[in-house]
Length: 133
Image (cartoon, rainbow, N blue to C red; front, top):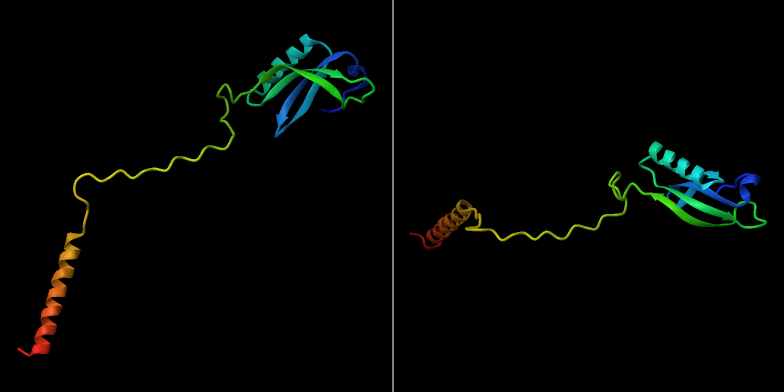
């Protein structure tokens, strides 16, 4: 969270944050809950495809704004509403089984018949050459 100014460090504040990868970027810090809710609603309307959250922030004493406790007030996740596709890796598709063919299999009958006839002709030719008829 970015360091807010000194006046925002006192009391309970509300911060608007936007998801950036695995971290959150603070867009604004407001002192009142109503003001924070209005800011959150305006941000959701302006950027409906972004993941946004409104958190309640209690800054720790003596910190420069980098140490704080927080509680989630509202979350806008467009993936839950179907506005954007889920970016998680998809599960691999199950292996597709080839259905058994129905009826006769496609066999190149002409090719097999041609090979058998050619073999018979060659065998007869060799027999005639070797036996001399």
